[in-house]
Image (cartoon, rainbow, N blue to C red; front, side, top):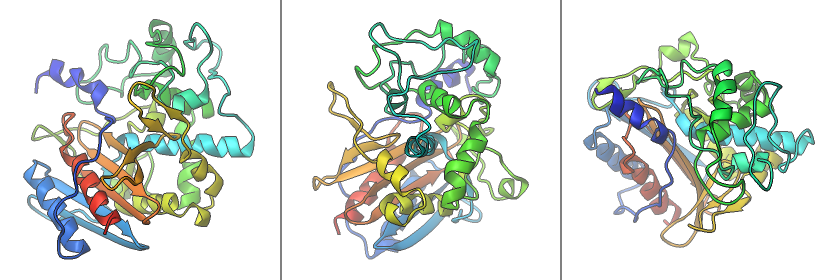
Length: 359
C-alpha cells in the first residue's frame, strides 16, 4: 500500500461525525436482526464482524467471519476513539471528586507550551467537547511516522517540540472541530505520563472492564482479532503519549456491553454521578447544531428520539457504540478492518439501534 496514502488518512482514522440512516427492514427476532447486520458487514469487506446488543435488560452478542471461527464476546479488538468517552468519564470523576472543574484551564508541566486563544485559554470542557480550537493532530506527529503505526514513534519530547508549532485553528469555545490532540492532552493533564494507569483505576476497574486497556496482556493477545486495511493484515496502533484519545486502547464486546449498560442505567453504577455528567449537553455547535456531552455525541433517531454515540477507528479496526436511554437499548459494532472514512459499518450500528429502540 502506498505510504503517502496511508499517512494521508491518519487524521480521519479515529472518529467521524455521522448521522444515523433509515431503519432497516424488520427481521424475525433479535438474533435474526443482528445476523442481517453481520452478513452485511462481511459483504462490505470485513474479515470478521461482531455486534452486541442490550435491549430490555437482555444482552446478545453474535459474530461472523469470512472463514474460520467467528469472534465472540471475549475476542479482543482495538477500540479506537470510543476510548475518548472513557477519558471523558475520568474527567467527570475528577470533577465530581472536586480535584478539577470543567472550566479549569489546560495545564501541562514546565517545558510544554499550551496553545491559547486571543480571548481566553483552553479549558478541560473545551477539550472534552472538541471545541478547543486545536487541530486534529500535532503539527510534527506524522514526520517520520511509520505509515501503518503513525503514533508509535511519538514521545513526550516530540510533544514538547510540536505544541509551539501547532497554532489553534479557531478560538476556544467557538466551534466544533474533532481533535485527537485535544483528547490526548486531556489525558495528559489528568495524569501526566500515567494516562493508561489512570484510566484503568478511575474507569475500567470500577466498571469491571478487565479487558479494556492499552496494555495487551498475553491472554488477550491469544484472543485478539488481526486488524486489516485494504485486505492486508496490519499491526495494531501503539501510542505512548496521546492514548487519552483512545488511539491504542483494546476491549471486548463483553466489556463494552458492561460499559454501555452503565450508560443506560447509571444509577446502578459506582460511577453514577460521573456518567450522568458526561451525558449532559455541554456544547452545541452554532454552525451545524451538533450537540456534545463530555466525549459522547448526541444524535437523533428517525422517530425523533435522542441517542448518544461514538465511533472509533485505527488502521486495522472500526468500532461504533450507540445507546438510547428511554428504551434501554444499546448497540455495539466491531469489525477488524479500517473503513477508509466511509460510514458503511457505523451505519449498520445506527440502523440496528433505530430499529430496536423503536420496536
